[in-house]
Each structure stands twice: as C-alpha cells, then as structure tokens.
Picture 1 (cartoon, each protein chain N blue to C red):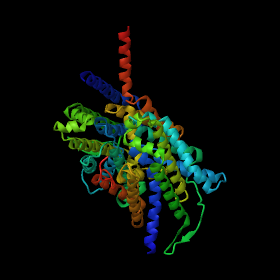
Picture 2: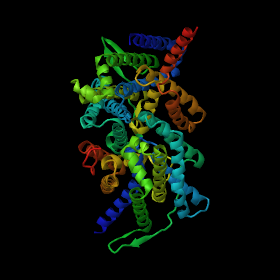
Picture 3: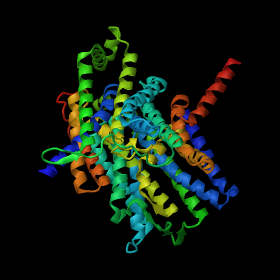
Picture 4: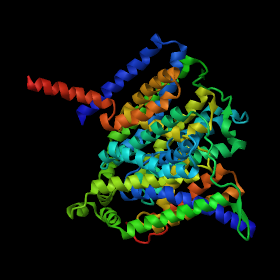
Length: 328
Length: 285
C-alpha cells in the first residue's frame, strides 16, 4: 500500500510539473484547449471518486455537470446578484449536491444497487436534458443561454479576472490539482477503506456497524458537488450553457474517460479526459462523423484489451521489468 | 366518449410497442443480468430494414418480415462476438454494449446518410369503430403485437425450449448439471429478444421518425418497463408496459412530449423506490 501511494504521488508530481511547464511551450489557443480539457478531467475525477470507490456506475453524471452549469449561468447573468462568480460557484456546488442527495436517498436507502442504479441514473440524465429543453423560460430551451461572463473576484485586495487565457489556465489547473489531491487523500484513508469493504460485501460491512447507505449517499453527494463545480467552471470559460451539457452523450463520454484512464486511480481519469479530447479534436478536424464510430470502438477495445486503463500500463511495464530482472 | 376511446387506443399502441421492446430486455437484463445498452439499436435496425426493403421496391409486409431477421442477425453477432465473453463482468458489458450502440448508429448513418427516412404504411385511411374513427394501420399494429406476445407465451410455457429457458433462469448451475447447454440457451434467448425488438422497430417505422438515433428513445422506456414491472414474468412485463405506456399517452395530451417523458421517468423512479421487486411481483427474487 505504501509503495503504491508513493507511485501515485510520483505520477501526480510529474503531472503538476508538466502543467507548470506547459505554458512555456504553448500559445494562447493551446492553453485554452488544455484548460477546457482539465475541466472535463475534473468532471471525470468526480465520477471516478464514486464509481471507482463503490463499484456502482452512475450513468447520468452529466446531470450534475449540467445543473452546476445552469445554476452558474443563471446567477452570473442576473445583474441584481452581487458577487456573482462566488455565489454562482457556491450555488452550483450545493445545487448539484442537493439533487444528488434527494436521488441518492431514494435509491441507496431503497436498496437499489448495481445495474438497477445504473439504469435509474441513466434516466436521471435523460430527465435533466428534457427538463432543460422544455423549461425554456428559464433555461433558454434548445438553444441554451449565452453571454455568461468570465469569473472575476477580489481576493486580499487583488482583483482576479479570468477573461485572459493565462490566469484562467492557472486557476483551473490549481483547482483540479487541489481537488484531485483531496479526493485521493479521502479515498485512501479510513473513508475509502470502509467504502471498499461495502463494495466487497455490504451485508458484512453493515454487520460490523457501518451505515452503508449513508456512506454511499455522502460519497455520491460529494462526487455530484464536484461535478457541479466542473460544470460551473466550464460554462464561464465557454460563455454558454446548453441542454447537451446534462445529456446522455456527455454522461457516456465521461465514463469512457474514466475507463480509459483507469477506474479507481483518480489521476488516470484526468489524463484519460485530456488524451481523448486531444484525439477527438484531431479526428474531428479530419472527419467529424468518424468520431462517434471510433469512440464506440474505443469502448469495446478498452473492455477487452485494457480493462484497468492507461495507468495500468505503468504497473504492467514495471512488473515486466521486475520479472526480467529476476529472470536474469 | 370519442376522446376516451382514442386515448385508450393510442395508449394501447404505445403499450404494444413497449411490450415487444421490453421483452428482449426482460430476457437479457432481467434474466441473464446483462445490461444491454445496444437493445435500442435492434429497434432501429428493424425500422431500417423496412425502409430498405421499401426503397428497393419491396412491399411493407416483406419489410416487416425482414425486420425481425435483421434484428436477430445483429443480436446473434453481438452475443457471439462480445456479450458471451462478459457474462461475469457486468460493468464491462455496459461499456461494450454502449460502444456497439454508437458503432451501429454511426454505421447506419454512414450507409444510409443523415436525415429521417420515409416509410409508408401498408394501409392508409381510418376504420370506423362504432364510437370513433381510428387509423387502420394502428389497429393492425396492436393486433400483430398481441399475437406475437401470445406466441411468445406459448413458446415459453408449452415447448421444450421454453422449459430449458425457464430452467436456466431459475438456476444456471443446476440446469448445466442436468445437461442443458446454458451457453446455447442464452445465445438463442438473446437472439430471440433481438428479433422481437426488430419486429417492434418494423411495426413502428411508419408512425415514427426513422433515424439512426431513434433507438435511445426506446431504450430508457424499455428499461423502466422491465424494472417497474418486475423481473421474471410476462405479467410483470405487461404491468410495466401499461404503467409507462399508459402514463405517457395520457400526459402527451396535456403537456409537451419532452416534459411528459421526464415526468414518466420520475414516476417510474418513485415506483421503483416503493416496489423494488416490481408492481406485479409480490415475492422477492
């Protein structure tokens, strides 16, 4: 366990160094591309915190991303509300967490687990998208809301304005690093251990005195709140929000990012999100209708070839070299 | 009176389709514990089969005969190439079948092009039903769906293959030890479910907008038919279809379709919370 912790921290440190060095070699456009990819990486990490730790797949995680995005948009677009950026983020996080708390309460305390949970959350994503389309007086319907201002706030006398590429990149990268590190320390500590016990055998974990539904619920709410945060950041950077952001396609894409990066590693999903989005841009610029086809193939290949994700390549190589050394 | 009967017949149309689509899911999801997210694409494939046959000059009825065959072929390939390797890995099945669903959607779009495909019904016009007039094709649709369901009930309850399926469902290990080839039984049952979904797609093609992406609409509803109704019986399937289909048709009169869809799914979630074993099943699985 200690060796694995050291490996994780090593990879994390390498990623932080790369993120710090990246602006030296990138122009403004490339910075915004990687910034948006990092936001989706944060979203992927939020799903992984729940899915990777509990083994229960949420198929409607984009619902929380979308709820966060819409709340942020509505708060910042309303001139009457002071401190729009801060209140918007706060509202996005608590709003997404609140919805997760209600749904999670119904499901976890109702004994819904496994594939039933997956299907119900799938419907939850569909419901959110339909609601965003049909509640057009608030959400702008199919076309969504545009003109969302960038984040700006005062901290310690300095005015922070994230309309420029560089500050927004630093802001997003710092948030992602802090949140991923925080999620990792939660999931490797006692909380994560209990979740693993529940995943292995819920009845036994309950017999040992752990309130399994409550633990699952709190984990789910935390995961949804971070997804809401990612949604709020995204709409401010993009300047618009649309029903797609809570839809089925984004829900499935985030699952691919986690699966490609490696479920349960928290860092892998962030890397997976960045890698896949780069690939998507390259392929889409070549032929846009090819991308869904390739995405589908990636799903199938991942399941058969890399069930543990790209981070497992590192572990595999390591065991390969160790095996070699022993053989010599 | 008119209004009531029209609503009732509209509901019956939707319920029949949901029952046919739900049957395949009841087999794969309910009984084999395979979460097949490509099930909606069997419906799409069936609808496209009718379109294809009509576009090369064939009649609707020929297309309708081709629809379940197309569904069965796709289902058989899917089971053979992917699902049979993943029976012990439920989460992997979810990922792989969703991938297949994307591949099928995009493949159909590449072959047939973007945009809705026209399918003409075999019979135009309405039928005078004493109380009200109603499109004749919809009545035929309801009749075919009911006959198909009856056939399935007879197949499961009267034939030796039906007995095999019921045995494998109740206890897979025990079925294997008494000499039933469970792998083969699963494969046939899965293909059979895909064929019925293909038939549903063919039946609905003249009424629906035939698009490569149309399957998703049926997928979520069909899952709820199975979950709400409860797993393991035709009765549950009927109960679930009546719940989802009936509620949708009634709501469609009052509010916009997207809001109706959202409300039906919400009601279904509440129903699942209150009766996790299904509306119809008293006993737990």
